[in-house]
Amino acid sequence: MHTADAETVRRALKERDLLDRTLKPERDGEFLLVPVTERIEHAERADFEERTQPAKLPRHELVGGIALLHERDAEGARRLLAARPSLHTVLYPESAVEGAYRTRAFTLLAGEDTTRTRYIEYGLRFEIDLAVAYFSPRLANERQRVLDLVDEGERVFDLFAGVGPFAITLAQKAAVVFASDINPGAVHLMIDNLRGNRVRNVVPMLADAHRIGRVCSLQWDRVVMNLPLMSAQFLETAFDLCREGGWIHFYALQSEMGIYLPRIEAHTGGAIHERVVRSYSPSQHHAVYDIEVRPPH
Image 1 (cartoon, rainbow, N blue to C red):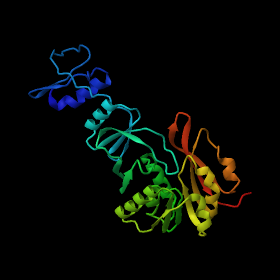
Image 2 (image 1 turned 90 degrees about the vertical axis):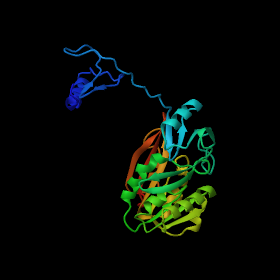
Image 3 (image 1 turned 180 degrees about the vertical axis):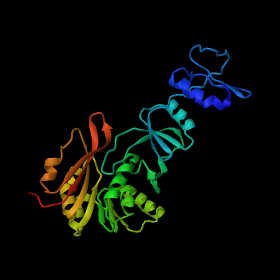
Image 4 (image 1 turned 120 degrees about the vertical axis):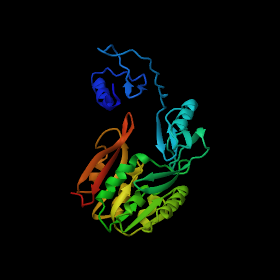
């Protein structure tokens, strides 16, 4: 076929399932030779070069320049590193997120021996150290959703701030955000991220959430509780911090919808909106309850 007609013909062959994708098209002067899967009238015979089939990459999650493999696969890690120029390190998590500081142990599979990287989310830059503080890029859209709910000038309390992704995101509209965490390493990284993003209306706090209610007498317009494995034990603290008419965003891991509704309804007569944020495991999902604070019925 003439090169001017190549795209039209290629599309027609594809629609009829006649295009042989295992072979490369060949150029012959002003004509393009396209391989097909069966004999076509007036077609000519030609030799074609086989396409190189890309090796299947192992399952992984990306955090900045680090890939976390789902399986301990050193060869797969090397292939992944070669296939993605933006990566500098491939790690395998040796443990689940555990302990009061929410950390994990890692084994280096390929690349630089580091757990530190830079991550960019909706124009914000975050310094991350996966061995020091937990971080999930999978909540990027959720952070934007909550930002859309924040009114200009709100006072926000982030109870489990980590390295600051919720706090720094919400600071774009809030008047002030208090951001606390019990992990010193996380708070140090949060301070770096505040400087890196030139954010001046977030107050970082090294604090135990169990004691926040005793030392903070202010009432807040919005409270964020992103500690999925343990948030439920801090519900009373969140209700003490949040003003009437304010909102709490309570994140939890659960195996079925509505598990925490009775506990929440004991504290408020306001609206409660429950939604699935993402799948966590075959038997659990990461859910959020948006809770309006009103006197219970």
